[in-house]
Length: 454
Image (tube, rainbow, N blue to C red; front, side):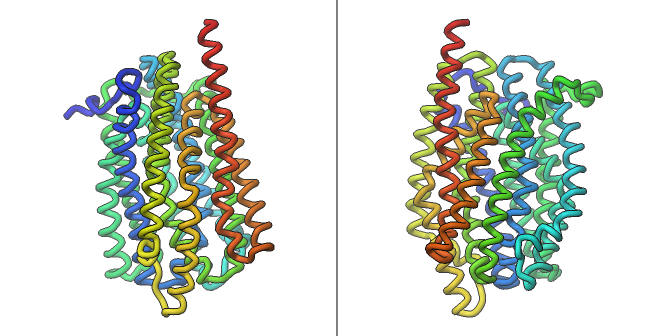
């Protein structure tokens, strides 16, 4: 099958069918991506114990800080690509792709150097317990060494999604997930590399996914990777960074807020950290459909905005909202039924250790599940604003997340003890969702008025 057959123009056809058709492969791809995250955690927790699990938890938010910036730049760059594709401006599309690759390469080198230099002092600043410090440091140093690989995968997958191809990233992630699981078992259970084995397996799987997506990009006929496209003009570089920087900054602010919360969490000891780590690994499972619908909304809105089809955007967003609400309700029900069994996959140790960490994990998981619809609205409307070319409001929503997450993490534990920590995440969702949903409707109404005058 020619690669171009997977490109999808979302300016024609039924919006709900297009959004579901685009989102389903992403959901499946994210399922497999979360599978190897879950397997990493389960193997580490069961084979290496609670302390190793806590080390991964102590590293989580700092890892997400870097990963979130990478994903932010990649997603921001893809917005302009989707708009050029929707407008059938293939020259502009190729210039944006070439410039994105060059900018991504420079950014990945900067992130690689800065992350390696700052990782130790930041972990100490976060009150990381000494007994898990070595494991957390090992995990992060290896993960950060793979930043160019992670950036390559995210940029290449974003190029494909901007063109309406959500299937190729799915295939890449399915095969990479299977590879990651096999390497986990080999490196941890056979070679006894410990926590280093888990992260090496992840980076190697990402390398495969990047190469698979590169092969697909090279087979798209409308993409011309000519030398002049990789020397970005000032306008093009400014336009791409204008879209990418706010999203990267938004993710960075969210991550810093999470790091502050982790600093508070670390005060409650290794078992408490291990319990929250088990739930945080399942958080990705809760968010799978939300982030996938978000990518679908960005591509759908971006392409239709490029084509000047505002009524289709309105109709598509109505469909995306109902789809998000139904999926979030289904996942909430599953979590309340099976949550305890799910977190049990990650925790081992003495009966007392298991009981304590499991109770922490289940309580936290149920709190997040109860407010899952808010998270889904956050993703759909944040992504729709990005598709409209507005990346400033999502950045402001990230600041609101930061404020709400830290305020709750610092205030509620003083009133409720450790239970107060559980509500920091959902408070952040609610603060951001209010800004995003209201701004989307105001901005879209303004666009409609401008369209009628034109």
